[in-house]
Length: 115
Length: 115
Picture 1 (cartoon, rainbow over the protein chains, first blue to last red):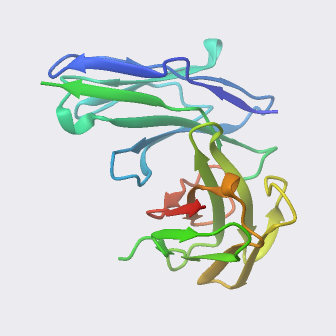
Picture 2 (cartoon, rainbow over the protein chains, first blue to last red):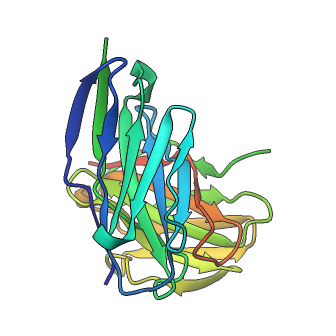
């Protein structure tokens, strides 16, 4: 069975600090995709990034960066120079061949960015 | 381009009543998903459809829950009879096709309160 663990329940930072959200996953599939979603206080879930299991290149997009390490089954997400608008719950999710295109979500990390 | 549309946005009902939640996926998307979000259980997949056919309903909690997708542009999730423990936010999501690489786009959710 697939599993996604987000050990950090809540993180509080001061604006402009960098913050990393951790995600560890378990799967028996050799081909899978990992996703990050953001859920702001308004409630909707917003897709942020997708990474496949064969692409371990880390990526930077603006203030966001992702660190995918297959050896440790981790897919961490970093926000550089955090802003108050980054305050949200962030979910890591996993899809795989055995599970079709359904997603297994982690429990989420609540990020609070304060002035 | 319109996103996933859900109605109603809020529903308050009394125990024992029938509740019907509605979803219109993004035009051209072939996969549709129903999720439930609660504080205790997080995000749970209830059921998903590909090309209007239910593929996996293993997440549907009880026989009181049923879902239909009569055509590519409409789906319903029905709870009959409703119970207070059904109170949650119900999300509908759609994706382009049945592929593990496809991200899911979420609707704004329906907040259900069963008194």
